[in-house]
Length: 495
Image: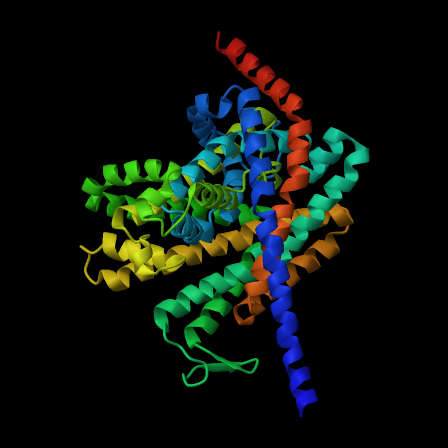
């Protein structure tokens, strides 16, 4: 009996050990090494490019909606379509849950450091978009091959191919292992369960019995619906993903920001004090939290880490979509690409953060964590609406569902392009099989334990950054020369 009990407990011990190892690896990857390298790279590019991302922000937004004027512009989708594809993967649960987690752990000052990361991250994203177009390969049939793996190999030379392969491997693993599948569909179904069946207990509650466990009916239905929608989109490839993203991404972003603006207008008298608190708490968090939450290091670390995780500047994901843009000007696409960081962090994350700070939902005395902080913020801030205690969770459920759904689409494209680089563009049968596998993983995602999967996905997602950042630093002189050439030609043409 004792031996049997020991054997029975072994899997739990191994699972616990695995979880601890994965969490330790995730904390290391998303700790000081990645934060330091990303920030230093962003600062370097900002200085070398003479703040091109600040002085040309207006031009960048114009380019978003202005199609390339040259009739022979190469690419598979419009520049706006490429941006929306990138934003579909970038704008996600981090904009709602990640901001709340950062503020909950580091205090209001974490939002300030999130903005700092975005400021320098825009220069990084500009360089990524520029290099993606400059070193991409356009096949005779119009199919575009591009991303960090291409500008590593074609920009740095064949001897660096091992680094490109490493990036592509991390990209495929991050996509299929959870960042684009299990964690996202689980986020959607969890939001549905929290709204429709918050107190669900599989041992006593009624529902559908699957895989030896009882699940709420809304969770199962949501899982089927999302899987069907994902299948219909991703089987159609990039153009269908881009088409859906061009509709869903602007809609969900505008809808979310509009609700946030409504909340802030309803509490407009508190906004100045909240902004002052954010700046002051960035440098002395303990003075404003009574020492309960955060320190300068924690506020900085949480803010920067969540900012990088949210906008993905430097991780190398966005240039995979940027490479497909219909343009012949690398610098032009770099400008469009950098607006993704601006929209994701400086607009959407700021809206979420201000809502949390203005309403006081972050205060340690409430004992809230993660998405519960955001729910409390919207419930308080929108209290003037009828049934705000129901309307706020419902709105956040919709927002999380849209954000997570588009992340599934975006990461399918990212990981598929990484796989294509590894196996060769001619092996489309493998790529199509991968799409089916991707949809299958989404299907089973609601019924899997995600604690380890989240950690594994975070590790590989973060590891993508290191090969990419090496390439950005080594190719920075190319970025500067290409940028200067473009703006000199633009200045000459305007005379």
